[in-house]
Length: 204
Image 1 (cartoon, helix red, strand yellow):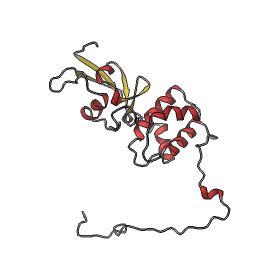
Image 2 (tube, one colour):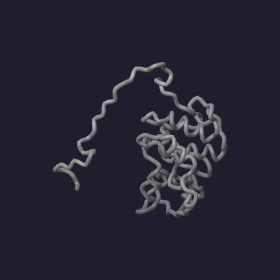
Image 3 (tube, rainbow, N blue to C red):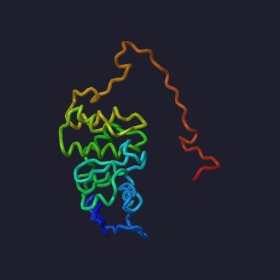
Image 4 (spheres, rainbow, N blue to C red):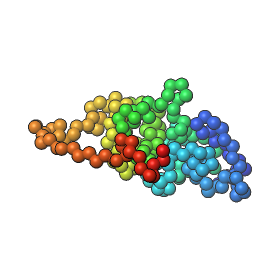
């Protein structure tokens, strides 16, 4: 392993120089890119989760390729160009098309895994603007969603890729395929504070 006194990373178009070592403020040779991004630089869009490269929550793009930042050492990123979810939005054009597609299709629930999924999808679309449904599924095979949002994720990405006939490009509800479905009464349990009710513990 080549020893370095300092490293330079380009993150979201900005240059950052770090000294390498074990002293105060130094980047340790064992420090992960996730740690550097989140705790040193405040780029908290990439999430910490499994810390083993298995869930995809921490995915970022390094030189055009999606990587698990929890498995990459910061010292190994010397000279590379890194993009996090914070760097996708264009100051002039606005949100990246993938970000907008996720909003349009409600492709998230808690949202914790969403940045990693978007970054992996972005890397795929950068190399292949019109991936097939199978290519999209394969690219996202390393991303895990506990909220089961993958159906709307695949729908959004298939629409963006132009795969309108893909199995998950559109949704049908079970009731849509039943003739004269039995109506189900909808019960609503509203919070007593939904209409402006004030209690002793209210902040107002």
